[in-house]
Length: 116
Length: 114
Image (cartoon, rainbow over all chains, first blue to last red; front, side, top):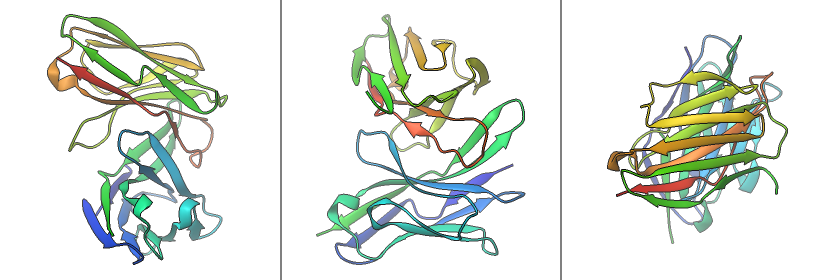
């Protein structure tokens, strides 16, 4: 079975400093991985996804994530945090199950605070 | 309208009321989902519909009743709810066929049960 672990429930950074949000997954084969962002009282928005084409994935708003199979990780990074990055971030792994369709497994989320 | 829309955006109801949440996707997808998001809790998958057929019901109480009349519309009918049902209810859609296909989420309905 697939699963996702987000290692930090809260991360706090100063504006202009790098962001690192950690995600480890458990999968029996090559996974499909996603990062979503959720601002307060809003739906989830896709930041980026891993589709096996490249291990370094670039997303929107300057975010990127690197797929490391040996470490079963898919950490999200950004070189310089902006105040507007303050939000909840979810790491997701997906599976395609016969006769059932897509199954999505969500991490518990990481709340990012950006200090001015 | 584009993407996934949800109405109403906010709903306050008493425990004896009956109300419905509506979700519509304009993306041509064939799968739709209901999630419950409570404060300080992980996202909970409630129901999944693939090609209008319910394929998952995660032990959701019967006071929540889903309906999927076609692949573009999804409803969540609510009756005799409890205060602990207060939460953000999110609808999502996706295209079944590849594990690389992501979900698209609506903005959610903020439900308060008094």
